[in-house]
Length: 115
Image (cartoon, rainbow, N blue to C red):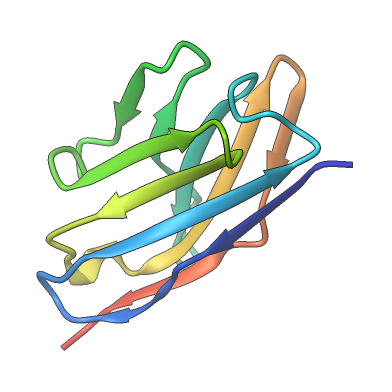
């Protein structure tokens, strides 16, 4: 059974940093494309960042240069370091694991950026 558990969300001020973590069980983060998505109520869930099985990374234009996705193979976790946060980054952030027909989601963690 696959479980993805996000942690690290919270309330921060604009310009501050936050790191999200996704603990995976039932899948190896080295064997799946691991990604972060985010969603604001009433708006479609949007892609944020991905680390491929190869280790290559991809980012949404809106977060490029501010966010960094990384993978800890020993701990079987994926992290999202978010710097220079903006109010428009406010959303529920979801961890995603994908390979072939398999697609899994975590329960999400709230990130709020507000002064």
